[in-house]
Image (tube, rainbow over all chains, first blue to last red; front, side, top):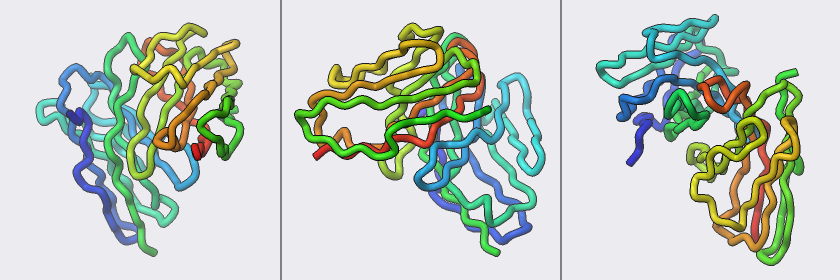
Length: 113
Length: 114
């Protein structure tokens, strides 16, 4: 049973426009969510996180929105740049007494110049 | 310094070999992790060390043996692996293993079992 789902395997956007990556989860006990970016042949790089007590967190071009009632979060990248082209993973923390993360399947973002 | 280093970058081993993967961080983090990632799949947690003690083992086969000699180092000892164990092995660290701090990943070791 996949507890963290990224239903779009890929997304293509034009440079300068907004990229919106989506993530759904099933476990209401998740209390912390993170987004990671991964280039080929590299480890995932932490982008931004959000606690379940918030509904929005912003860091530069990246904003994460959390809708707990819908068990849905999204990552907005504005403006999108070609260097943002990578695989994006959503991850959820299983509980406040463990460092365990569960990752979604990933969405490949391509930003076209 | 926000770097997690892993050696070697690539490793090819036979099913009867014994080898070790190494991971190091100097961020003062007290939790370290081993993940396994197959192609086009998300990272899957294998082990968590918190304050140098094994806190999570995700039912990993005994042919994988983790070791945390000190708070900066993490090893993964490999013995009698199977071809299906071929994957990218990622190490990560975080400030603590008991609160959901961000995990910082190394570049990984690409393992091929022949």
